[in-house]
Length: 244
Image 1 (tube, rainbow, N blue to C red):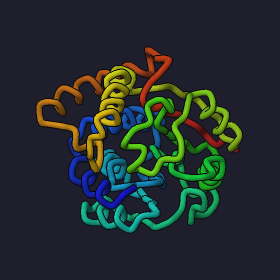
Image 2: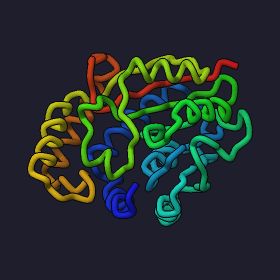
Image 3: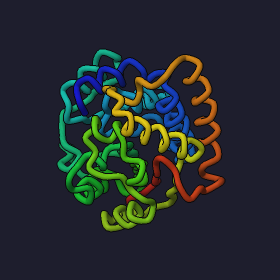
Image 4: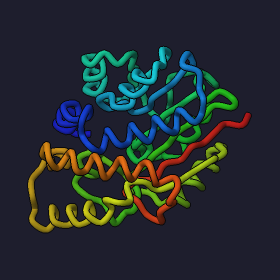
């Protein structure tokens, strides 16, 4: 990501509706896996630490972060979120089978070889371990945040499922989320493009009142997405396992 984007994210990730809602979804998914709190857990692509914040709150004492950006690592250190090593998602600097849980949320869209990234996730997972992988969905939603975050692509559910299977992971569940705000986000991104509005990050488009409203909507969204199974969403998330 752009350096300015890291600074904005670092400032807002604790309370911004998007990060709050996604942490709620991840908390539910992780809790369902019944992973011991002393298990080794890896967060790939920590950025400024939103997932490490969650893992710390859940009591995971043996958490490890990885990011290729010195800026991201610095922010995580300042916030006291634990160890973050510098490295590449396509060449993880860890041994085979080291982790019982791997988080790769909004990561593989950044790399050229996403199959290599999935294969590396499988390699560092212990047999029976779980990977939670989320990516931005629908190319029609491409906008400013994709540009400043240096995304390579957005995904649909079926191609992501095929990618996970090609990486020799078993996918236990996959579904779209952030479906309630799909049309407003699409419209906002079209408007930003049409009016050539200059922003360093979409996270700047917020106020205290708006954040409260969007937080409520998004929390409802992540609480229902797994049940409703919407045919679209701003993001798609998969829960995968390494069987052997």
